[in-house]
Length: 179
Image (tube, rainbow, N blue to C red; front, side, top):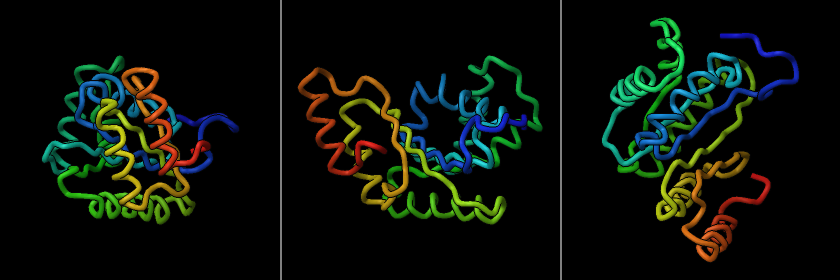
């Protein structure tokens, strides 16, 4: 892993919860991008938990991610680099429910704490269509994963202005503006 200059990147290890992890955007852009960010040192000691409707286990998700990286990464990835990244990947099917997601995130955070001796930060990346956004947000709330976290929602944010305003209002029922 590359050394990041002081003052650049996060100061704490990150747990990234990637909702929509088996979708087209995740396959083409997000998974290869997370690999490159990890290699560059911008996700130090990070863990990435894929969440989607597909009935995968963690190994099947790693295989999916490897195929995505092989197809869409702009750089060659050695077996050693892949092994380091794959070790940071986990997966929870939405069919398993909020308790399974809570357990996976808690496990990832404990793993970071025991290996790096520091607290972690949580980032939720919602790579889902507008119609699924609120369900994903409520799932995170039901899983108790809202406090001390950040959220990124992929565009489009709603389908028009009125749906975007409504989505924003509903989002603020679960997450605060500064998250």
